[in-house]
Image (cartoon, rainbow, N blue to C red; front, side):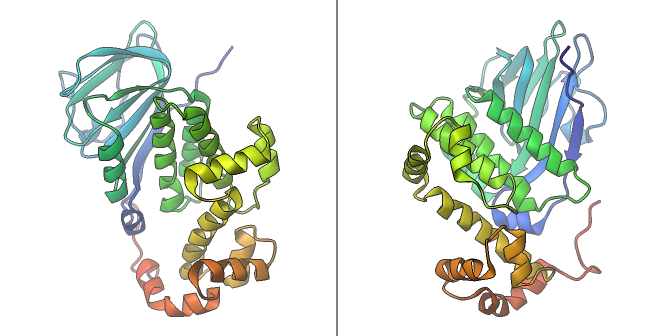
Length: 307
């Protein structure tokens, strides 16, 4: 017998780092709604609850993914329609909407809420309130992404806002490729990215990823470079070097610790890659950015705290 996933909800405090990053994860969760049960469940903040007519308006973007079950959805810009397993709902700020599961089936849903300058740009460029229900082709990948995000959100030591927010564009990319003629290639690239980002403390085995994705490394490399402009290893190093900025500026990691934490084979290789990307050694870069470090990572007495 298949066991329904445990319901989980988390609302995250505002972070100045994530605001500057351009992608800000505001909330995330999953909910198991058995047949015949009330919807939505209790426990959500007032500004997320539906009114007496079953509608609401949010101040953020949301993606609601229906992992199983069916129901109905409507919004100010879209007529009522049936939604079913594998559909994703796109909710836009200021756009009134209503949705609920069919009492006969219930459903299992995942969701995340987000905002940010880059998030707004992508949503306005590639998605529309007039077409808010998307049919997903990559249901397994979406489920794994949501489960990974919720695992990190619920961990005793919360992941950085940037790593949490990195799930948002990946999820949106999977939704967008559902109607893209080149969706097979795009999905291959997104799955490879997802595995690279899953554990930045290790050097990714790219040959193993290619085998797992059912292709050769030569094909993976050429497809990845065509879609991103980077070879897979170049992309991985770029992400790790951006993460190195935060680790170095935090004051908790020296250059050697940072190289080890990010899975570089040696301090020499890390320093060489850093210099190639930024034109100076990690030590020189850190010295130049010490003032920025004090602003981004304040002392404990002034550090932002969760409400």
